[in-house]
Amino acid sequence: MAASENTDRDVLLSSIKPINYRLCLYDLVLSGEFTYQGTVHILSSNSKGFKEFTLNAHQLQLKSAAVHLELSNSQHVFTSINTVYDVPKQRATIYFSEEIPASERITIIIKFQGTINSNMAGFYRSKYKPVVTPLHSVPRDGDYCVMLSTQFESCDARRAFPCFDEPNLKATFDFEIEVPEELVALSNMPEKASTATKSGLKLVSFERTPVMSTYLLAWAVGDFEFIEAFTKRQYGDKFLPVRIYTTRGLKSQGQFALDHAPIIVDYYSDIFGIEYPLPKCDLLAVHEFVSASPINDRAHSLSLLLSSVKIINTVD
Image (cartoon, rainbow, N blue to C red):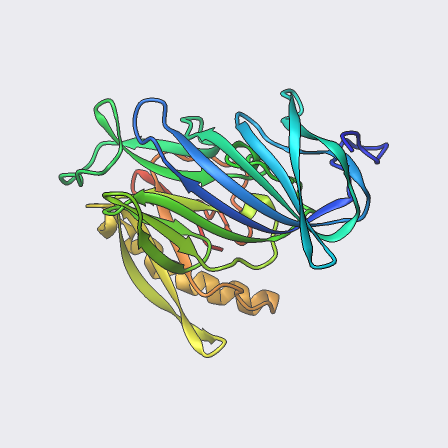
């Protein structure tokens, strides 16, 4: 299952189709090497038996992998025996000792380690000079403070977690991340829960996303503050909250964006005849950001100039 069935382009095989990703990131090392641990549960359908499968992984270390299969009210667990990386193609092939049969529901569970890089791609860190005294738990990189954010468009979700990183392989996402309790964590959807874990840390989980491509998933962590307004029209039975997030001390510079963002959301919803699909709209000022396109649908990157800071929209 490592080769492509298509003759005109090199894509992953279509027999495994993701349905839902449950992604948890924890044990973030917020200095030095900036590593983190992760576990992803990928609920999938599988139309063909296999002894190996291939997915995307770039600059990740896959520590273990297993497939859980439910048959006749009993659960079978298949543990991987080897993982082979294809670095140029940014893929990993996971091998098993016995064939895993076709099934409408399998769960792929992968434990992995990643790096919060400084390349403005995948899960990365941005350096900045604070304008107010930073919180004690704010990550540092030399003389700079650090905020964390993602840029997955067009194919860099694979830098953050192992996944089927092709736009047609859509799924829903349940995301959670363990962060210092003083810091703010954001993602596409509203926060569902925040639970204390180890001393000084909390696990923040978010509501399930709509069905979407991997490059649309987004999250951010930092010493953030926000200003807020609402749309003039209702979505469902509520006015949509629109927030501009910045690192602390800079929120006043977001007023221009806040004055216009709710109007833009209403305008596009009307002109395209498509209701804005999410329960909130957050814009985040990222100190170091680059994008080949201003669009990152449902985790949209909306590039606006905020004084000397670049703004991206982390939630459609």
